[in-house]
Image (tube, rainbow, N blue to C red; front, side, top):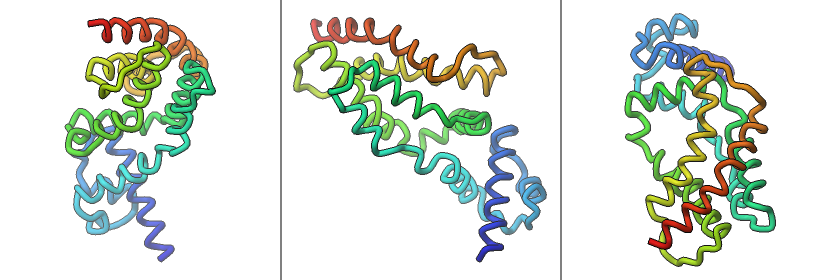
Length: 199
């Protein structure tokens, strides 16, 4: 069993590295050679991709983040700064490139990534933004409101895109950059929420 676990770890590590740097069309023989196993040990391409994603992204979401985002005893600015600093804090170059390549090949569309992102993150933040903007509404969060939150979500993701995908410099520590982006975004986001609910 230990030998099997060891070979599986080498397979996933090799596939992760090659997928991230070269894409998902890497010949299985190259993955097997790097992992020091037979090509047969890899399993099917679909199975290998699932194992790679489970190893790199499975279990990344922390249930305590949901409680943090909903805790109105803490100012929204501090909640968002803390959440995004933790949520984006363990992104590696390999992970960023792997996730981007998966998006380019349409792999995220085949799963429930968008629905999960909305449920766990975008809708709860939009609800808290409504509250911060003193908007009382029992209506479901609208698509335009989600787009307001996506402005922040995308901005905070972009430093990793700049550094890990484009090879560009990023100036400052991630927690400081996150806090700055939240401070810049929040006043305008509250104003936009109020505008949307006046229409």
